[in-house]
Amino acid sequence: MSVKVMACAQCAHRVYPARLWCPACGHDQANEVAVDEAELLAWTRVPGAGDEGDRLIATAQALPLGPVLVVRLDAQAGHMGQRLRLMTKVEQGVALPWAEPVSG
Image (cartoon, rainbow, N blue to C red; front, side, top):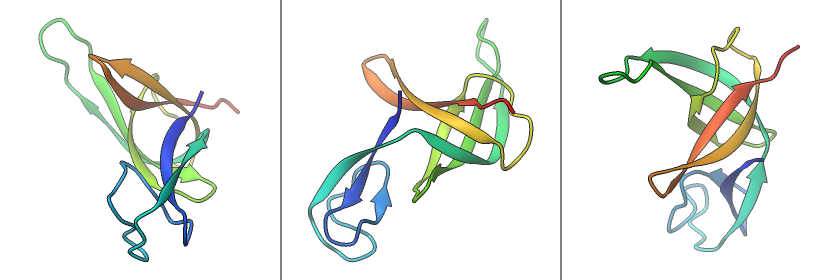
C-alpha cells in the first residue's frame, strides 16, 4: 500500500494534498506518485471522544523526495527518525494517509 502525492510535471516538487499550481515553480500540471515509506519527524497522542481510544497523529517526511505529511499511526512509534510504512485508509468515504512503524 502507499499514499498518493502530486509531483509537479515541470520541476518534480511534491505536495500533498493536491494544489492547483506548484508552490515551487507555479506550473499547473502534476502527476500522481505513490510513496511507500516516510521518516517520523514528530508524533502526539490525541484523546479519543467517548469510548474511542486515543489517536496517534504524526508528522512524517515522505521518502525519498517528500512531501511532509500528517498521518494517523497504527501503533506507538519508537523514536523520531524511525521509518514508517505509508498506506491509505478510507474513513467515511474519504481516503486518509496512515502509517505504521517499520520494526528494526
